Length: 349
Image: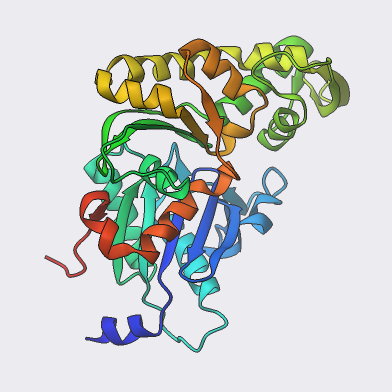
């Protein structure tokens, strides 16, 4: 009864709980939060110092008693308590301008397809502990397809590739369900690691994840660019232990990422090979849809199209496709719940 009373003054929200970023969609408002999935904690007092962008700014710069950590690894909860605190922070932030003293929203959360029952339960429990009165779990690929306005309920086949920070989801969708899929623990973070390894092996330069991410965004690509470009990179010289700056070009960065990109493409091919012929016909006609932060890697769509012989299109604003999908489910929850969403019990067994 109390849940229903508090729920009536709470806002239903959709959450793209990503390894790298968390996006929050509020019903009738749109995306209101887009921040890194990072939490800074004072381990002496167990107090949260910052969440999101403020915590991201602390990564690699904290004293011993402050830890800036990602509570999700490869799209799943690795630290339950920190995930709970992060979700509670975002839920409270959404309700801050209202008079709701104890928000109890209904929450739709996107999760990777390949998660186990234990991993799924961890997300559900973290959301409920953070204040959700009801938790609906939807597969990330399905949410991305809905966010891209694909006709997921129809009998036509659609193929979605969602490349995030910790996972890459490849899914063929028809009649409101996933017909064939692969969930890879290979994604944007691995591309960053490739760049870090390249700098270490080729230049004896030690750089951090944030620097590698900036290099990837600045000069990374899946195929050769029109002209070879370069960017300065600063880090620590492994030989002298002193600061060092080098100039890295786009050719070296592209070659360093090639193995990871190739592995993703091999899995895309394997998914296509295991898909029923009738759906392949639809996919060939409609093309493959690319979403997630990895979709922003220049010329990745062209490389996938060349390797699969199927047209590939990057959705508009690929970073927010999953969050928009959770929002559309909230807007029309009765029509989409039965065939798309895992509905968790709101009462304890």
